[in-house]
Amino acid sequence: MVVKTWKTRPAHCFLLETLEKKKGAMTDVALFDALKEEFKDLGFKDFNELLMRLEIGGKIRAMSMARGKRRIELVT
Image 1 (cartoon, helix red, strand yellow):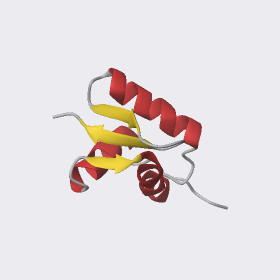
Image 2 (cartoon, rainbow, N blue to C red):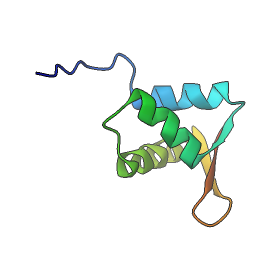
Image 3 (cartoon, rainbow, N blue to C red):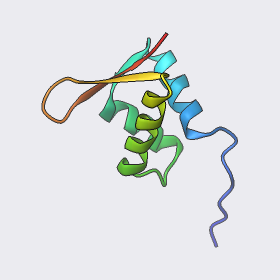
């Protein structure tokens, strides 16, 4: 029987900390991979919703780079 425990840190905090460590900018694929290591059950749809909430809140900026890639930047 697998026992799941609650994470002590919410996903949006981990996302913002990861962006800070990477000098404020990453591609969405690299950021998703970093979050996926910490939060195993996080899907890409949940990730996009998280990005949308942070962008609406003025914490990050998402810009289109190439076909299917986005650059996620931390707003200072």
